[in-house]
Amino acid sequence: MNKQPFAASVSVIVPAMNEAENLPHVFATLPEWIDEVILVDGNSTDDTIAVARRLRPDLRVVVQSRRGKGNALIEGFQAARGDIIVMIDADGSTDGREIRSFVATLVNGADFAKGSRYAPGGGSDDLSPIRSLGNKVLTGLTNFLYGTRYTDLCYGYNAFWARHLDALDLDCDGFEIETLMNVRAAQAGLVIREVPSHERSRIHGVSNLNAVRDGWRVLRTIWRERSRGAAVTTAQAQVALAK
Image (cartoon, rainbow, N blue to C red; front, side, top):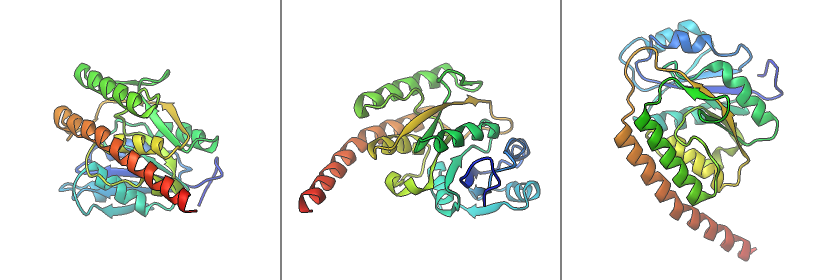
């Protein structure tokens, strides 16, 4: 599949719902060397699929079975054929030209490359003061509970080796998907490295993100995963004793 410059094939997952106006900008930033692009359509009522196929004839389309960004990403991950999976947004906020940095980080030894707007070299044109504050509080709580050293918990630009999908064991439908991935990657002992990323403002349309509602879902995910982590550790210990 691969066309260089990396000795690994790369799949890019793009969840989208009514993003026809933004896709020309998004696809224009994608590197020529990526191996496949999978558009996961959330039952769009505009020309999202038609525009995407016109822009990229080799596109693969997955029609989402349920609702929510988490469900869209999970279904895209399951359909991916590449060694490496990259997740980007369809609203123009994530720059496809940064994919090289994410893939290079993985090829150089990381299991999970986590985008960060707060790492040196990163930034955002879109974060409001209240969202930034909420993100920092949730990031700090996660670091305290799980021993991580993240700088940006709630950011959806990430990449990882497809072989780690079973370890992540993703099972949520909403925007909390990024938090779930970050926590479970840490629980699984994956090598996680942050990649500086600059978030741009949405080009057209209105975001479905709700700071209060989705912030609450993120908080519940952080707390819920504590008990799951303990259960996983106990199960692993029991298996070890049985052996």
